[in-house]
Structure formats: structure tokens, C-alpha cells
Amino acid sequence: MSLVLAVNAGSSSLKISLFRRSADNAANPALLLSSSTSSIFAPPARFKLNFVALQHRSLSEEVDSIYDHESAFKHFLYRLKEEASVDTIDIKHIAHRVVHGGDYISPVMIFEESYHHIKKLSDLAPLHNGSALSVISSAIKALPHAKSIAFFDSAFHKDLPTHVATYAINQQVAHEKGLKKYGFHGLSYAFILRAVAAHLNKAPDTLNIIALHIGSGASMCAIRNGQSIDTSMGLTPLSGLPGATRAGDIDASLIFHYTSRSPAHMSHDPSISKEVKVTEAEDILNFKSGWKALTGTADFKEITEKADTSVLSDPISRTADPNTLAFRIMLDRILHFAGAYHLALHGNVDALVFAGGVGERSAELRRAVGEAVACLGFAVIDETKNSQVNDDEGIIVDIGKGDERKRMLVCHTDEQLEMAIECSLANEFWV
Figure 1 (cartoon, helix red, strand yellow):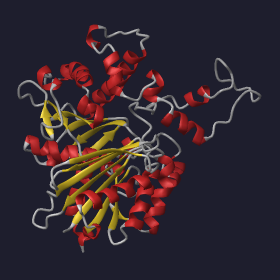
Figure 2: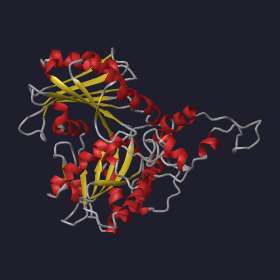
Figure 3: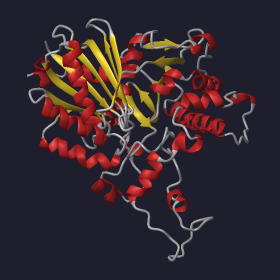
Figure 4: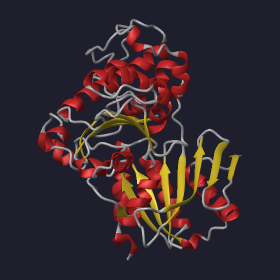
């Protein structure tokens, strides 16, 4: 068998899917099984293994011996052998999701040069690139016969217009240091594009959509004729929408005020000013901000259960409730980009598409966004359809009323499947 292992390393999680490639239909690899490991750094980790084509059963357990991504990958291989009787020699390719690829605009085989290039970019994606490299190293050691290939989230945005990708800073410095908008969640957006095109029976290169990947990391993307023309994340995944622990867009000077020794405001008095190192600033803005900083929890479901989500009944809110505030901040930032992208697409939009853990599960957030964008001609959300979206309804769910051109869709995105498809279709990897 020609098996493809698709590996998606998150900041504290590891998702892995095993596919069989078909030489006759490379665009449709068959899913054999999938696994997820969560709470990696808060033992005991939770490990789940779901058999799709093999025995149709599942396994769920807490594992004390998992304490990092490398041990999580080793545990997966152990269970693969013990529970699925899969001979790892049949795994020909390992597709790794890597968030930041820098100048890499297409998948690359992992050799010493490409490995060190990704390692250099770790500071630009501190929540993800390091964990991906840890799994890559473990995979090369455990499965030396298989080809490890990196698939980059940033690659989907390679065709961003120059004026969109360029920051208004000294361009000599920008070019020397690679300081520009890269964009992320590209594997998800590639899958969304593929799935929505099939759903609407349109060629991908004719499709115009506004896509929302809303999870613990959140971003949006404007896609015109199948290409990314703008996206909310930039040089790093920090900018744009707030996330579970990320601040999103802020005034660049905020971090100096935030860390100032002065109790009330930043002072230029050198005796009380504080030097802020890049690592300290990134730690605050990546790990100590976002919904959790506002509410005490990174669980958006818990936030919406406590929040007042009836936004249109009180459009000018002065709420002090932290959960309502977090919900409305998220909605406000989404609408900011939705309006901008609607203009960038000249109003010619086939669909607004929700994806990601929050986008696929939060009926409240979808309802609030839908109510706001209805004035732009988007389909009115059908509340029954919206409230009943679940993982069993297929890849695409239409939550709008009628057949308006500007659809409101939910896409159950699958970054592992997207990597498996791209890997299967790339003949150069199979020579």
C-alpha cells in the first residue's frame, strides 16, 4: 500500500490522519484512521484514535507518558501498530503542516537545508513552528524510509498583491529582513476553496469568497478567482483577529505602555522606562492576551453561554460583562474585515464561509455575523439550519434561506485531508 500520514502539530495538540493513495484517483485519497492528542503540556494528555476504514471502532484514553509533541507522535505510532496492525513500512510519505514557510511558496522535502530554514522562522510563528519541527525530527528518526514533506500555511497567500503585502516602512530594511505580510491558515483556505467550488459546481479559479477560519487562532481571507488577495494575519499569526490567547491587531506602541514601570502611563523618563525585549513582547501578545485575558477562559463556547449575544438589540453597548465584551470584540473585528473584503471583491461575492473550531460550532457567532452582513445582500440565515449544524452533515452546510447568490456556508475544514490531496497529486514526490 502507498500510505500518506498527514500530521498537524498545534501549540498543545497533535492531529494525525492516515490515508491510502490511489494511483487511479490521486485527488481522492481514502481516509483509514485519524487521531488527536490534546492537553500535551497538561498531563495526562487525552489521546483519541478513530478507525474509519479499519474495523470501524474508536479508542479514547488518558496517557501520562505524553509530555511533548515527540512523545505524542511516538504514542501514536505505538497505537498504530498495536490497534490497527499497520506496517509502518507502507507509510511512504509524511505530510507535515508548517505554519510559516517564509519564502517557500510550495511544499518541500525535508532535508538539512529546509529543516534549518523552517527553524529560523520559528520566532515568527512561536505557537506552531517549534512543535512542527519537533514532530518532523521524531518522524525522521522513527520512519527513516518515508519522505517527510512540509506543507506551509503561508504558501496559499503567495500571490497577495504587492500593495497588500507591503508594510509602510523602509523598504531596504523590509527586503533584507523579509518583513511583509505572509498570511496563514492557508491549508484550511485551500480546502475551503476546493470544497465550496465543488458545492457550488464552479471552477475554483472562478470563485470569489470571504472565508473565516475561526478557532483558538483566528483569521479571515478574501479570495478572488481562487486566489488570496488579502488576509488578516500578517508577518506573523499575531495580527488581525484576536484569538484564544492572541491579542490580534493593536497599536504598535501599546506594548511599551503595557510594560512601563509607571503605574498610570508610559513615561519617557529613562529612570522609570523599561526595555522590552522582543521575546517578552511576543509572550504577552501571543500567550497572555485574547479571550482568555478578557474572561479567564480560552473556551469560546463557555464565553458565548455566558454572554449577551443579542447584538442588534443593543448596537451601542457599554457592557462591563467580560464575556459579552469578548464576544462583541470578536464580532466587531470580524465585521471590520468582512466589510473591507466585500469592498476588495467589489461586492462580487459567491459566499461567506465559516470554518475552524469556533466557526463550525458557534451558532451564536454565525447568527450575529449573519445579521450584520445581511445589509450587504448576503442570504438571511435560517435559524433552524444554523442551530443544527454538526459534523455529520457533510463538508459543506448551507445555513441561508433561499438561493441568493451571496451564500452563507459552514465548511468542516480538514487540513490533514488537504495535505494528503496535495501530496497525492504531486507526482514529483512519488518518483
